[in-house]
Picture 1 (cartoon, rainbow, N blue to C red):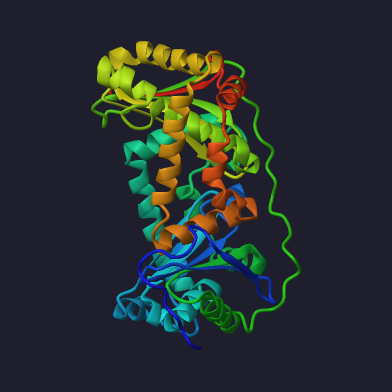
Picture 2 (cartoon, rainbow, N blue to C red):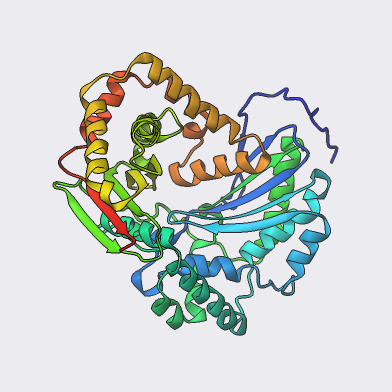
Length: 431
């Protein structure tokens, strides 16, 4: 095929992806951008949330095992061939997805893409390799338990999610991993690693038709001997949990800390209510992002009550968590909690000025734009939203959606979701 490269100065719209579906049901999203690289990102609609208690940690463990060889690639050969071209590859598992990615030079993409598809779709899953890698995963679980930030996040997750599987760590429990049989992993791969649960995103400096053709051919080769599956259909649907109806507290002593950690959390919509997550993103920025965030300015810059403070809106597919978090001396905890609650009441009861809204909308929108300049950034953006929302409208229209948010929208979201008499509190003290 003939390749026509774009010049290295932007001459195309910010977002102009093409969506293609293969005969076997694979969704391919392709976009040419003037950066001398190509990123291939394979997204699976499977993560820790779909696991049963009997196999929790399976999705992450499988991610490890996919790099242990295929019938066509001996163990280590994939990495050697990738590194020989100066390319990079890695993977990540979350609650709602798993993805595998490769970044290479445009001229190497046709040779390396088939390797990535083969690794993901045709792992050997050898029993001896499985037992050896089990020890690696168990060590990762032990290291996670030794990390104070992960310990505190786990306390938060267990309070935020009473029944949703998001309360479980992605890595799983050591007791489960120790007992997992290799055949259970093989069945898990057969069930979930299939075309209609996968999105391939290819972004870089090759024509869109070339990107789609290479991805399609690579996929067809990798899946040539796979049996046809009936449509997977919708994944499990988890009902949202109710908002807190009172103040619920969890406290722990963590001697590894130098200062205490305080988190206030509210249960909020997830990506299945994407419009509300936009509004909550803006509220989080107004309260606790950057030096102009209200809580940052008041509690750190002006009063010195905290050494660090911030706010964020964590969105899973079916549920979200709005969080305000602080690092502070233990004696300041009651006062800082009261100040956070007062700031929440302020945005709930008083319309935010248009100047503040414009400033924050611009900051959040620019951070979104600046974070999607590289091929890997753009591929992650498309793969994430296609996998979790079923389309790209939320990805492409993010900035426009922010611009449409009014002061009334922000006040209504605060009133609806951020009560000052019902929320969760997680505190970790050094002693």
